[in-house]
Image 1 (spheres, rainbow, N blue to C red):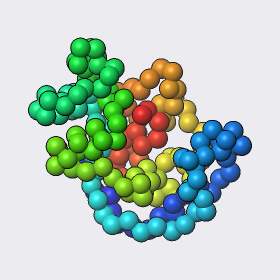
Image 2 (cartoon, rainbow, N blue to C red):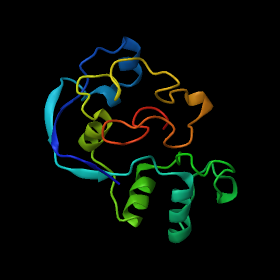
Image 3 (cartoon, rainbow, N blue to C red):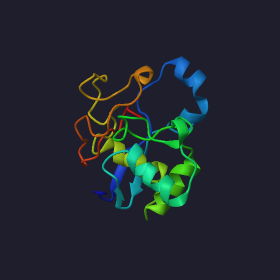
Image 4 (cartoon, one colour):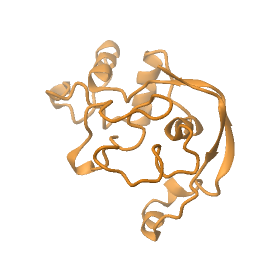
Length: 162
């Protein structure tokens, strides 16, 4: 796990969004303006998303239902190191608790994502995503975890992928 140090950060969105984004995702974007300073205590976060193989260990140990996209309840072949998808918040919370961890709060997640890039659109700055920076093509699905450079805190895949 990676220690995300305590600190103040600018939470929210300083850049305008296209009207379409506001029309299609109003609930998601309702509280991201105005930008405000938020203090977050230090916390730990896994360095990458939970992989299919990590989630499978939880499913086996707790006899928990697998994600619906696992045929016959098994990790798709060749996808062991890919992030688990199609799990609910409750499933993710149960997996975290089983592992002796917890899901981050919304403020913790935003702090972890931003690193020290306050006011920037992406963890790496304002440059638009490229195939070298992150996976943003949902049609192709996610890629294996840790494929792109980590952010300032040493966390992988904090924008894109899942």
